[in-house]
Amino acid sequence: MKNGLEDVIAAETRLSDVDGEAGRLIIRGVSLDHLVSTATYESVAALLLDGLTERHFGPAELGDWLGEMRVRIFAHVAALQSDLLALPPVDAMRVLIARLPDGEDFEAALRLLAAPAVFLPAILRLQAGNEPVAPDASLPQAADILRMLTGRMPSAEQKAALDAYLVTISDHGLNASTFASRVIASTRAGLTSSVLAAISALKGPLHGGAPGPVLDMFDEIGVSENARGWLGRALDRGERLMGFGHRIYRVRDPRADALKKALRPLVLAGQVDRQRVELSEAVERAALAVLRERKPDRPLDVNVEFYTALLLDALGFPRESFTGVFAIGRTVGWIAHAREQALEGRLIRPRSIYVGPVPQAA
Ligand code: COA
Image (cartoon, rainbow, N blue to C red; front, side, top):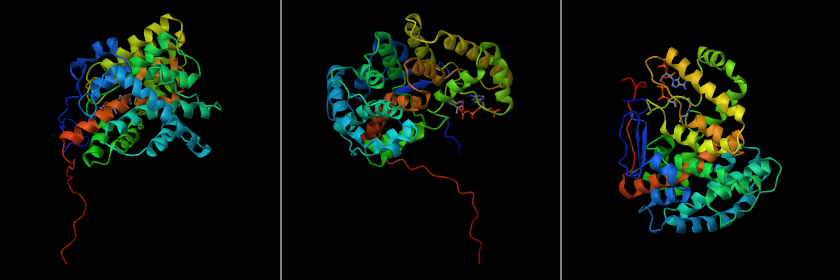
């Protein structure tokens, strides 16, 4: 019995492979390094979904359909009343997604790709007291998300940075939320149910809920000179350093470097707070040193959430929305895995070992 199912193989997949020793991620035969410098959200979505629905399409067709679907989905934003707006953004988003019909076909997949991209910016605008901005079907998904968030057309650097983020996090092996998606798909409940289960798994701080706390950590540290002392005290209290460590990677998470690279054009264009970038570099250096000292037997390195925090903050997303932005990007991976499971897998039904009391003989 493995408590966290580590090293247990629970699916065969053609979608992605995480090599934790080499620090390498492959998505449908393409390395992340290559993908992130060449692909858009639409092209990685077409790559992941290829052959898994009844339709055949390329990135351009998918982009057109997705634009039209964003416009249709926007009608659901009217359901955002004050009780929903009092919830954290990812929870409000989950409620709106739960109202979408379930299904296993391409139309259901398209709805679920468009929905989080439309819902999250609308929720954030309403929570800030602004009117939602309607989607523009002619824009690529990344540019439209930023436009719906801020009400302005994003710069080329901002659009490219969000595209790189969405590509980088599109899929990542059998992580907790993807496994949840596959479990639901194995019962044939439908893609909406799979995506809802996956979002629910994602929001935990040990999975996709970490990047907001990374920014809280920067704020509390304040200046570079405080980093080492602050981090040491956090470990003394038995806390975990957010943005470090991973179940599979024993070296640097390759997605951290992909996002660091995606951040650079924004820094060069003066669209990021330079002081925050310098502080983050000091925190990273100090954290790696302290973790090496305190946990010499466990290689702990930076993970995707560390640079996610910097990148999404630079793009104007409030920190409480970071998990929701992650969900926008990861939904395509969840859908691809759910379809693969439904097409090729069996009902997932493991066993447990009973360690409770047994009835006494009379
Ligand atoms: N800070 C401090 N110590 C950490 C740590 C972190 N971020 N991540 C792991 N460790 C330590 C644990 O305390 C444990 O030490 P111990 O054996 O002395 O008790 C050891 O490393 C192994 O941890 P374990 O809980 O077995 O690893 P895991 O595979 O279950 O954890 C994470 C993976 C991601 C949950 C974990 O690294 C973590 O909590 N990171 C912070 C949250 C985060 O950044 N999440 C985003 C992940 S992409």
